[in-house]
Length: 106
Image (cartoon, rainbow, N blue to C red; front, side, top):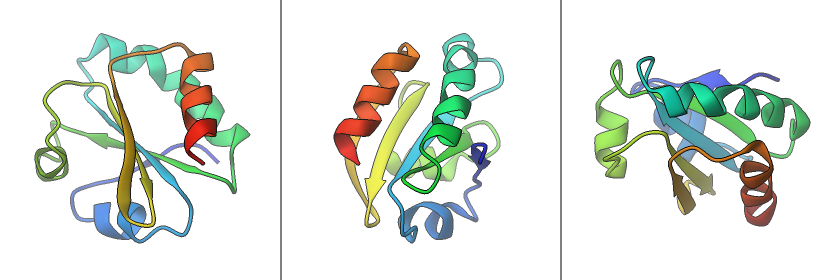
């Protein structure tokens, strides 16, 4: 399963009400580091299908969700479990680092 695009309108239902842990990637089209980690997140989404859901929120098109989460820089990754933030990471990281962060939290 590839990453899912989430909007301000679907944030609660897709993230906060999910049965699975959710990694939220706040990103923008113009952000180089965001594009850098995009392929790794796609691969991890398929690798951890059924264990964790990875979603992407475009901050330019959906300003409310990042504002609510206090996002100041992108890429910003948040791990949600049972509707609550349990961990977050700011900035780009290699796939191995992203994977170990996800494994640690799920």
